[in-house]
Image 1 (cartoon, each protein chain N blue to C red):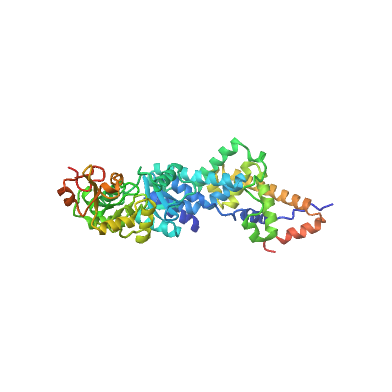
Image 2 (image 1 turned 120 degrees about the vertical axis):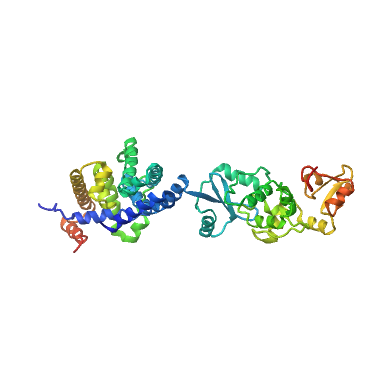
Length: 267
Length: 208
């Protein structure tokens, strides 16, 4: 009986071995390696008041936030802006996600942001904006004065228009000097209004107040005047509330500026 | 020198000039071949993914400490396989995969590649995966580096630290064992007369 003949050639066996290579490597490998070696930043998707957002971060903090859309285009914009790659991650640091979520729902503790590619002036504007509390608004002129460039309202406006980290750096809390809510890069004035309403800043009332010539409010018992959204102003009862069209009229009436919201340089 | 070797040399020169800008190209070029090598060495997709990541991260960290001259002169491909192979060896030493079930649930029977290439290939792939895992480790790595990864015996010698003559013998013995087992399994599975098996087998012989 001669039925165990060597019927397979080495070539046939080799062809079968080669076919074992027909299996794609998981995409995760590249992401993981680039992130782990620090060659790329990472980003993740998370919920926000304006719908899902992408949050890109590096070892030095949050670098970019955008409304979630086309991932490839987000990555390209990031690369263009920071000269670095960014790769998606399904497991962002839990602490960072938590910090952002708390920030979006009212925490005034600012998370770490990386503004290393912004100019000095832009950085000052953005870091000052980071201080505006949840549910409050400040005019452009306030930022300009606080950072020591009192006549640079317009430049403040363009620095804010280029805010790489909207929502986290709340440029939606900066309004026009005349009290009008103004434009918003992350979806226009309606979105800005919507976010402010959600935060309890009552944008419609603010604008009505400003039209009636009350850009500052004070208390006739304490003789302190504030921005209308300042937490101190909100504690004043209706019958003691006084409106002022500008700071000089308040000062002229013997009121002193609030030390917390600083409507003018506190003495 | 073939085009692949030339492109690897070019890549080494680029890495020497600017490691951070070009390391992504290393990842893109080698993640696939390194991954399938690790996959067929371990039989587990999960382990292969981890091992490949680990190897590439170690490679980057090592390159960071090397001088530009040293990087430029590197045999990049063999060096990367050597890192990966050592990681695999360390893991194999901790728990011999041959004592574990061949299919751990990650390496499912039918991958998309199998479906595309048809039923016959699927059956062959399943058999071959199992038989490869049955080879002794030193035969398995030699056969895979030679025919799955397409390394030259010179490169294999650099990766495995064994003389080329030894490697040729090991590849030869590995192939022989695979062929025998394949034949034995097709005889055992097909309840057909040996003559039929022979005719079917001849059918897949290349060049017929």
